Length: 292
Image 1 (tube, one colour):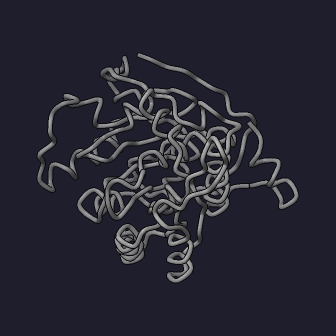
Image 2: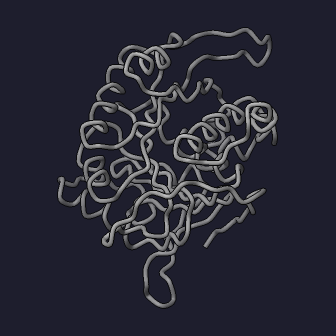
């Protein structure tokens, strides 16, 4: 089994969620959902790099790919093999790479097979990924959800007590309209909306440094303010994000001192603060965001 461990730079503390007697993840302090109202906005890239930024900030972090119909975490994390079973038969062992423990349905089905499942099968698969994977003790489990507001979102929202959700959108109106529906759904089922991330926010030319707002700009911030949700940050449109995901080394690991990684670290720090993390003070924030 491919593993690559990194030791977090320093222990960090998070306020733990309340855990019930039937909670499938009693060793996980916080469960953080990452969702989008529609596909194609870079939700999985944000989830993956957010998890890696949290590890670099000193949190024990896991990543669950619950995108049943289009699991992409195996490719983004650079693992293409079946997971191992615990020698004592207690459950499935997650992979570990870049310091992140992770699991995906993509490891358990043929990678070229279409997952054609009705609601009850989706709900069962989510339940098994939560209960049968030996996640161990984690500060944060980042869950990459399918786009939309369907069975997977409702199942995990009702099955475990969550710390909150992050909504990923791009700046254009068609994506923002669907992001609003995601916020409405989580508020209706009692899940805290930690904030909105505007992905593909702008493009900086690597040659001349000029900025182009390819998909407009600022729509995520405006919609977050209108709905009373925190705005967590802007992630630029950068070919390096795509390239890193395709080769199995996300940008936060591939270029930890770069502009994009710094943007993800800013989002991670705001998320940690929202769920009770002991973040740096205002004077130290710039130094924290800039460290490699």
